[in-house]
Image (tube, rainbow, N blue to C red; front, top):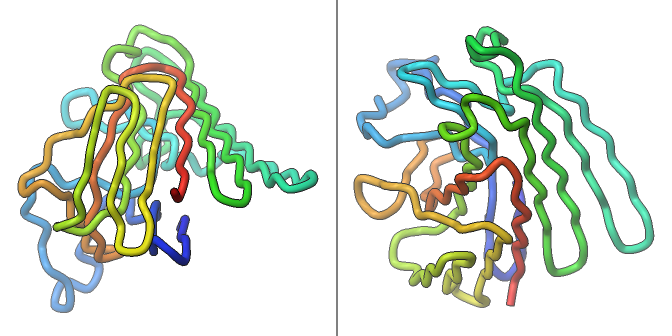
Length: 192
């Protein structure tokens, strides 16, 4: 979870696929546009979904230099059974650079025959009622104590939702799902 004392949660992980593990204690998710809240690279081919966050053989490396913590990840787009798309492996890298008041996330994946369908997904935690302003390369979210500014070197799209926000039962938060239709992008998140 990426959390700031002035904004609360900003990014979080969730189940890759919502499952009623305790069916008597869990609500079914009937939203046709429901999705995981974990930032990711994904490829949807019909009903098949391949995500870098599903790769159980992903590699993570952490560096701490001066006032910057860098987390580097290497993974592949795979489905829940660890299978690559039919046309072969798609390698991915996601790097997280943490400094005092901002986080930069660098996304990259192989260009393949599926590049047009693959996208970068960034669900940003934002409860209903928080005002947002979106232009082609940035989004501003008016939080209670501070504003959250998210910028990218690529065009950012707000993905469709049923009610204006996406709700995920695990962890029980609302989000604005953002998408980037490019094989590489750099996203900066700042509390301003």
